[in-house]
Image (cartoon, rainbow, N blue to C red; front, side):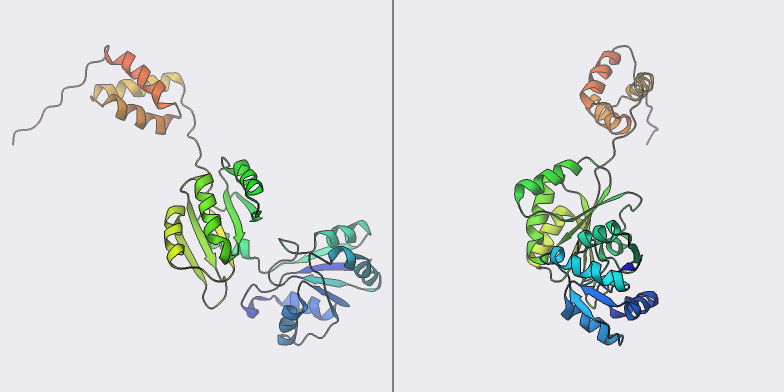
Amino acid sequence: MSTLYLVATPIGNLADITLRAIEILKQVSLIAAEDTRITQKLLTHYQIHNRMISLYDQNESRRIPLLLEALQKGDVALVSDSGTPGLNDPGFELVNAAIANGHRVSPIPGPCAPIAALVASGLPTDHFLYLGFLPRRITERKQILERVVSIPYTLVILEAPHRLMKTLEFLYQTLGNRKLVIAREITKLYEEFWRGNLAQALDHFSAQPPRGEITLIVEGAPQSPQLWDEARLLEAIRSHLKTGTNLKELAHLLATESGWQSREIYRRALQLKSTIKPSKIFEGSQ
């Protein structure tokens, strides 16, 4: 059986294509491209002259029989306008059809805007959640964000420049004032990584409307501290009471460290206060 190659193409800088990607694009019998006009510029630059047809969201289902027929005769490559095909780009139906018909599906790794933005963001990369483009309908968008609001994973979101402000406002309202990085025009001449929090981003981009392709890297939900057992909590309360710490300050401080609710800490501290004498603090002579 033949192979369907998923060929990653540059997200801006044409020099970012791999040698293997060029080799595959030259040797396949057919190239399926999201937009043939955009892909033609890439092929012309690297002197690739293979046959090409379009495959985009609206025609993918209709193109599948033709592409399966082509796979019966030889290898086929799938490319998107930029980056890795099948990731927020057409190709999902074709990949599954190729698998169902016994063909190999082989990725040719390369540029990927979400990963490029994530690794350069400075936010945690050990666990992340890719959300792609958020739905335009408010109810659907709210449902998605409510499902991830308590997840401590870094969030990766794609957005168009004309929708950025609405998305920032929605993220601020739903997730709170989290840290984020806004990556713009990655690998291109005006590449920019803006860093701050959601409130600062709203101020900044309301005054300076963005242009170009945008990826948002948003801080995950803060992780709750590991809950102390009761004995450890009471010992900490006693220790602070001996130094004369104000009960409200004590409750707030230990709530952050222990995972217990501040009102419960305050209640227990109040019970213990009468049994503990504050240590004397002697001031040296001036």
